[in-house]
Each structure stands twice: as C-alpha cells, then as structure tokens.
Length: 89
Image (cartoon, rainbow, N blue to C red; front, side, top):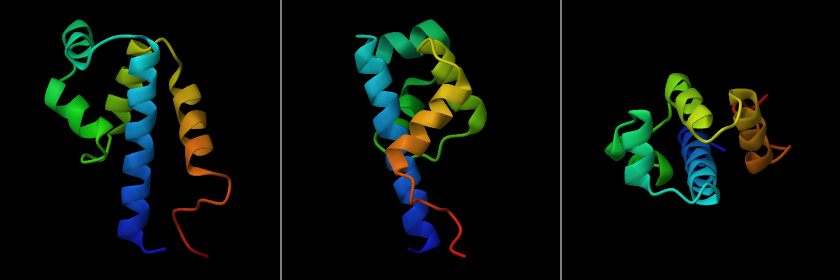
C-alpha cells in the first residue's frame, strides 16, 4: 500500500471514530465545537477524513468525549486492524 493511500486510510479511520464518539454522546457537531472551543469546520473535515488530525486536536476531542487519549489511540488501532502498518518493511 502506498504512503498516500495509508494516510487516507488513517484519516478515514480517525473520522469514523470521531463521528462515532460524538454520536454516542448524542451531541451535534456545532455543540461539541462550541462547548469545547474546537473549530466546527475542522471537526467536520476531520470526521469526513479530509484533514489529517494533529495529536493535540485528537487529544482535545478525546477529552471532550470523556475518554483518555490512550483509549482513542487504541480505538484507532482497532479500527485500522492488526495487520495495518504505516511503513512497509
């Protein structure tokens, strides 16, 4: 799998997780953005897999959804699957 394809895979996985977290909390994108001072456009683009998420943003969103960043990272690993690697060896 090429580097660009892997980046897209990660961005889509992050977006899926962020959307699930928000929907499980039953909160709108707008309300999440306003309550936790996160740009609404950024949230939208992250959920749609358009933006590559910065660690600081992911950490803030994880906390806004009531989970630890380490749990978010584990969710990302699970979403990507055990056979996913970023670097082909």
